Every structure is written in C-alpha cells, then in structure tokens.
Length: 395
Image 1: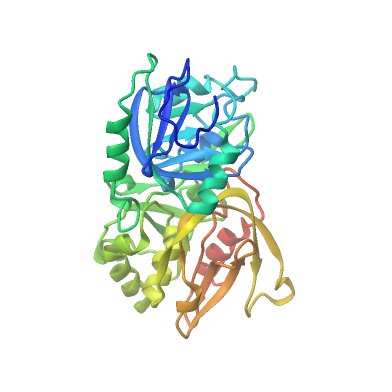
Image 2: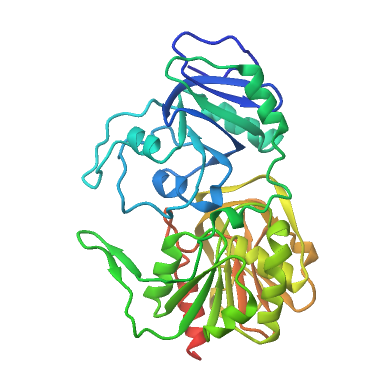
C-alpha cells in the first residue's frame, strides 16, 4: 500500500482508508477498532512512546501520522497510559504492526488499539503525507477501518468536509475529569511501578485539568507537592476554598481562545490575588491570554520528542542561552509579538522562533509551551517542577 495522490480506486486488499477534506484518498490496511472517526491529521516525530502519545488528551479529535516507521513493535501495557479519557482518535503508520517484542508488554498493540476504540491505518507512505501537511497545513479528514474493505468514499468525504475543525473548538470540557480528586500517584520505577504520593507533602498545589497527562502530577509529587486536581470549569471560590499554595494550569486540546472564555477570568482573578501559577501547553496559553497576549493557529504545529528550545531573556544567569531538547504537542501558539509590557518571553523554539515560555513580572507566574514531564521524551526540563514547588516554599 502507498499514499495515493487523489485516487478513489481501491487497491486489492485495502481494509483501511483516510479521506482528506480536499478529496485526497489514502488507502492502506486497517487495524485496531473498526468503524470511522473524524479529526485533524497531524504528524509526530517521536521514535518511542507511541502509547503515551496516543493517550495524551491534548490529541483529542486528532489523527496522528507517526514519522517513525516501526510503530507497535514493543506492544502495549497498562503503565504507559497517560490518561483514561479521550486521546487521539487514530493513527497512521508506515509498516504493518508486527508481534510485540518487549519484556514490559502485556498485550499486542493492535489489540490495545481495538480495546481503546482507536483506528489504525498501516502501509501508508507517511513521508509523503508528512510533507503534504508541512506544505499545506494540517487537514481535516476521516479515518476508517472495515475488515471487509467496504467503504462509502463519498459519504466519508462529505463528513470530512462538514467537520468544522479545531479552530474555535473548546475540547477541554470533553476531556476534563468529572470532579475533584486528591492525586495519589508517585513516580515510576522499573520493577516497582508507580509509587504513592506522601500524604503529608507540602506545599499544596491545586491543578486545573484542561486535559492533563498523569505524568505532570507525578512530577509535581516528586518535586515535593501535595496535589489536588479539579475540573476545567471549577469556579474561583472553590479553588480558593482548597487553600492552594499554588495553582497549576494543565495541558489540553482545542483552541485556547475558546477554552479561555471560562478559564481566563479565573486565571486573572488568581493573578490579582498573587497566587503562584505554572502553566504547561494549553495552560501556558491560558496564562498568556490572561496576561493580555493572543494565540493563533499554527500551520502544522509542533509534535514530537526532539524539539530544541532555548532559554532567552533576563533572569537565567549563566544558563541563559542554554538549549533544552523537549517534548511538544500543540497546534496553537502564543503570538510573541502580542506579549504586553510586563510579560517576558523566557523560551523560544529553535525550529521556527515561536514562543515557548513566558514569565509575568511582579508575579510568581510562568508557563512553557512544551511538555517538561516528557512521557515520552527527554528529561531536560524536569527542573521546572522543582522551580515551581521551590517557589511555593519560598526558595
């Protein structure tokens, strides 16, 4: 199977299909869950961690093209799930998924995809598809799998064309948890699994869940915090009733401007009360909006575990200019040109110069666009969790 520019002619043996809103049809071999799903097609350059990527709620309503060809060969397990809520709707891979070969695996990747309702498409020229996204932007599309190879291409095309896309879409409400939760998960160790958070840990961090990854909370625990997680639309008075020493703003999917309709007023009030704040990804964008900046849809987005980010601006001392290799997953970004006076840019992408971090002058408030918790990815940026918790302890 291979990427076909615009042909509706179905190759022999094709059991999977990707139909782009512009009429492009991509045939391949389906796997995982049967049926169809609509979303935005993006690409991820990570070589490892496909299970963590697919269970990241920031990928809600997205179809991931993996640029690394051998996806699924280490199987799947329960420990590498980043969230129990909705993540990516499906994925596109180059090579057919082989039997797993890893001592941590407890199930085949194909079975795991089926169990989690995610549709896979293999045998695709992912390089060609990635180049298309880079040139033309991330398209809307429908991915479908039918073991008998029966597809109504025209109906799938119509569905892709009618889907409104991520711009203007608030998805945080779809992936946030239903109620308040005291986080109990500690850091993972080989042979021991995930530890337990100490109940007497201080300080107390209230984390607003816009579609969070679990490893974020584990890193906060490792840094010495006690964590309480609350839903995305939790009112200010309920947050303050928990007596937070600081508030964390999580990652999440969708258009930050849409989520900001209810999130930004709460964050502005927290800033007015001088509550320390730390935001990651969507949370970083929420903090920037609350400070007066703007966000914009990116042409192709940043998704992968190998993105170089440089520390810039004042306050870094001898480490100014240092480069961190980071994990990223975002299709929207803070417009650095709109940062108002009093908001300092602290990190920039070395791929395209886009904003990757801010700090608000006179406040204990900062955010980064990337994912310092990794999962998957490098651990260059774990220091940010220690920085935040140390800030709460007066260090």
